[in-house]
Image (cartoon, rainbow, N blue to C red):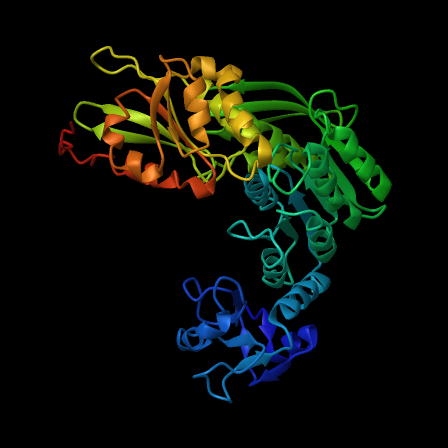
Length: 480
């Protein structure tokens, strides 16, 4: 399907099109570019103009540029604009303007991307649904997502994030959502904010994009919930609070955690609904409640919405749970929880709660497995980062954790606070553990890996996965 013609893109951006081309997609990276994409030459860590020739050679339909790059023919298919970033925002705005989709915008300190994926699975039961494949939630990611939106989409889910004050409102204005949802408010990006109330105010600015026909969805049981409610009320939108004690909206009646799934029962505007979320912890249950509020706000059938949510599972890096077989013949394995994409105090506490509720298995020899946590630094926490890392030792779920390995200079504070029975290794770099993962796990264990992306603990996840033995009857090599 043609997404943008040369004339449409030129009209949207105020640029000059060279050639009569048609683009089927949008790309900002030659490594993921597909033939027929319009390549956007953004200037970030590298200047995208340096890659225009490669993009065209790889089959790009055209490239959006502010000048003809060296090595590119004057008659090459291009869209010449005064400023590429400004033109990308204009292209995103045009994509939004021509769409008939019901647009849902999602923000929050924790769970934005997971909730976006939950909404995608839920809404696909009702029509053609558009959402970014990755965490495209910043000043270029939001317009890229909007520019990629097919005109005939029925629903669109737009993730909106921030690192600094003042970032959410303009992105929400660009998305112009019918429904705006906040997942939760938690200590994250505290380097840029004085306190958690400042974070709540910034997140609540997503509601400034709504009007009286819109819907505002927010957690009602947080210390900062009054800030969210006030901002939602000011917008004039219909309010849909969710959480314990909600006077309307979505109220959880029961959450049952098993080794295989989380079962959530809720009252949604007077209708009782049950959702089964495979391989999910309780924090995903609260996100599920928000998704049910979206369904109710859009007037969708709640039973079908619950079935759609049941198709979702945590992706890699965000709570994905899998069995790693150490020896197929002897039926020896451990459970890996990959939550290595990011971390802050709230998401770490939720991940540890999940670990505490999973029962380690018993090996054929009778050995009971352990609950093992491998924790990397939490970044961007500001001047209180040491105290926030130390406080992890007091999380209630830590009482159920048998062993904790720590990665990074900040996690040294936690390591020192742990009792000797729980204190595992502390290393400066993730690579220091990745090379010895075979010494860190044993059959029957449940192993959580969690840390901020910059802590690079995802490399430990990769190393743990490499222990997976073939299941074709051959014996895995012994390690010592």
